[in-house]
Length: 97
Image (cartoon, rainbow, N blue to C red):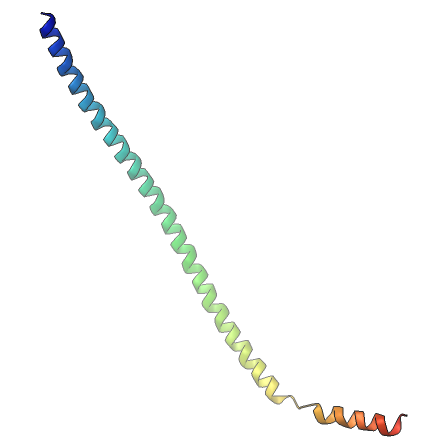
């Protein structure tokens, strides 16, 4: 009777161990699924923000191009002041001693 009880107890322990292992696996799967869902939400948020930043970047590059063309056109219209500076220096040297 004692041997039969020990055998039944051992079989019950093995079965309980198997159930414990299976429950640990399902818990880890559930935890993994929750983490992946949370990561997907974060990834969606990040991709939206990145797209906004890229659109802003394109807009600022376009503005920079416009302003650089304006600067080039205004610089081309400006006259050189080298000759005027030389004339002033010569005038000061000749008449203001």
